[in-house]
Image (tube, rainbow, N blue to C red; front, side):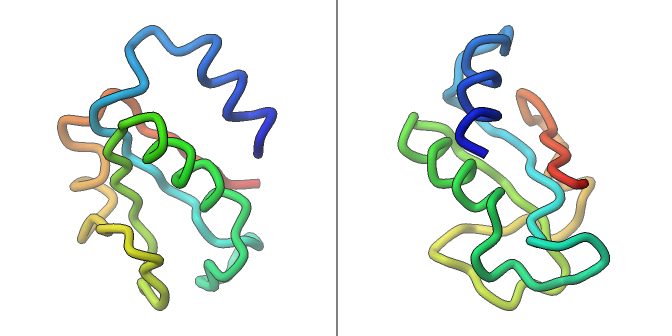
Length: 87
């Protein structure tokens, strides 16, 4: 996920600030468990860079202090980009 963040930072056309929709927080495909999920690293880095990540996960069992979108559409609405972090 660290390599992905560096590639995102290098290739993204807009600033890292702003709103970023994030889908696919489950650490394993076909599950709803986000504990120790690699995409949470990316969400944390986006926050460190001054961004406002808006992830959607259903159900939202653990929040980690992150504000979750209520739907995938809400995660995407008005976002700079929608990151789909699935297998």
